[in-house]
Length: 116
Figure 1: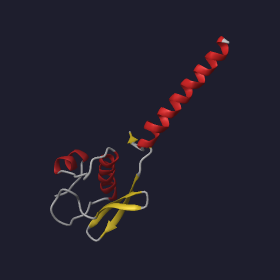
Figure 2 (figure 1 turned 45 degrees about the vertical axis):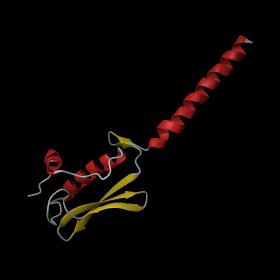
Figure 3 (figure 1 turned 180 degrees about the horizontal axis):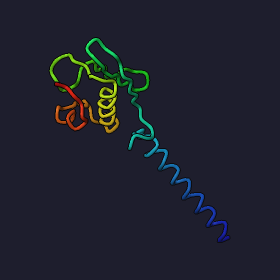
Figure 4 (figure 1 turned 180 degrees about the vertical axis):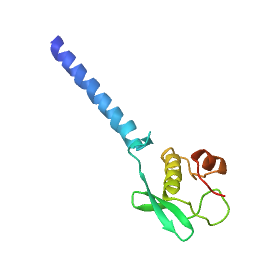
């Protein structure tokens, strides 16, 4: 009888843990540390004035950024790597629920992005 009760208790604890995981953790789709799940996908694009990026949520275009954000003008990024780095930073903000995911010149400086 005691053995049966302990089996039921263990099964109950496992079921409770699985329910918590699926209800609260799995549904977050948050990208932490560059790994894991994210609803947002980044792609770099080559434009008329340099490099830019698109960010999609599933198949829906959320952001089309042809110019360097936070800087006046229409100049794009000098390299594809700079566009990808900035897009990754913006995606990081979106993953954490920051909307709109604005980018300041201070943040561009911190990322090492050339924008002058």
